[in-house]
Amino acid sequence: MKKISAELIKDARELAEKYYSQGKYLCSEAVLSAVNEVLDCGMPQEYVRLASGFPVGMGGSGCSCGAVTGGQCAIGLVNGRSKPGGNNKKVMKLSKQLHDRFKEKYKSVCCRVLIKDYKFGSKGHIERCTKVTGETCQMVMEILMENQGILSKISFLTDKDR
Image 1 (cartoon, one colour):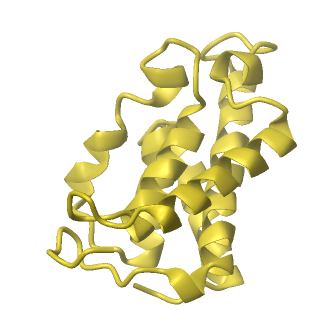
Image 2 (image 1 turned 90 degrees about the vertical axis):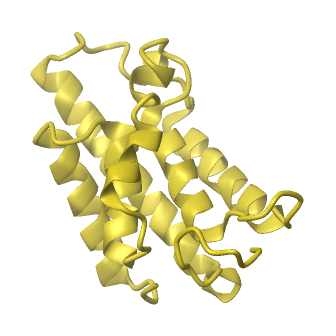
């Protein structure tokens, strides 16, 4: 995994925004894919389907913002445990940081609240969610950078406990 820098944070944000705005991925998929690619985590790209049910607030229900849930997946990819009963303190701490930062910035983590002023699928909706997706990816990368001292070494699907 690459050491996180301001340049990589910018790259991840731009990639997430590109994926979303071009319709290649929805919010959760875009954040997870961008972090995986920019940090060279080694997660096979087809595994992005793990985040495919999160967009539009958990499968269209309007609840948790998909960018946040995709960000949680990315944090788990980097710092999650890989064995049952393994230590999950790092990932829990960082996941809470993402939730709290997002809520501080947007006042809600609820998709329907975040996009209430936009018609679904409209230009305004796409612009809003592109921005939220990029900013969330940036938050994830900043949290990971701030905590590089506790980052796990990534070898996707290893037997090592994190």
